Length: 257
Image (cartoon, rainbow, N blue to C red; front, top):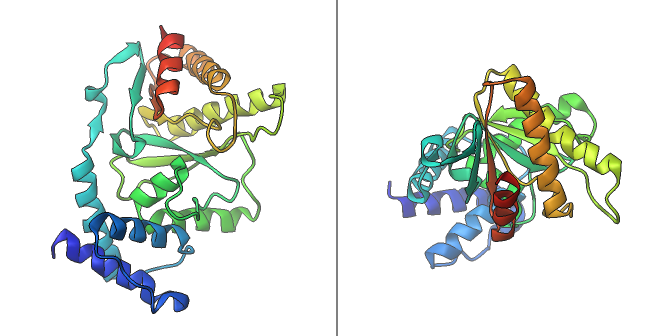
């Protein structure tokens, strides 16, 4: 089966399982079809799929991963001992764990093709990730509070695991509690990674996007929390600060010296 055929199969499967979309027109242009597949995956509730779907989805996502290119720790120069800075798509990183800036529902982003990192990670990982998150939340029986962390498999991502953490949402002035919760996010992820004996972890810029934490203040908290942890736990964890925007890269570059 070619990649184009896989794409068509996946789109048709997701349309056919949704009673409101049977007459939906599938576009001809490839990028439009890819956006449609991602949108259908984004809006799909957490529920099982057939083995055929999962197998073909796996083949499709593996091929897309190869096209994007995988980045290993060896490809990233470190800026300080145990600390790296890399600008790019976090879903390309082959490390022990990447960090997802989740929302309190912990099921990923349901907005079709939204630009948040939660959407990007779930889209690249496949529908299995939402299903695993759903099982975790069903057992928890309450929304995820800010400052904690959960771990799941990474499925079709090049990393081994995904760490999900909910950062503080900023509505006005940043409070000390907001700062403490953001620091807790980084610390919780590090401690959970250590509990699983992981050796490398890539952090996104938690809370700085949709949650409106000021970028430079967030970076200062992230760096200080990481340094404090590494000082107490020497040689235990390689940390990659993964940024996407140019402004964040410049902030981290200056703060890290």
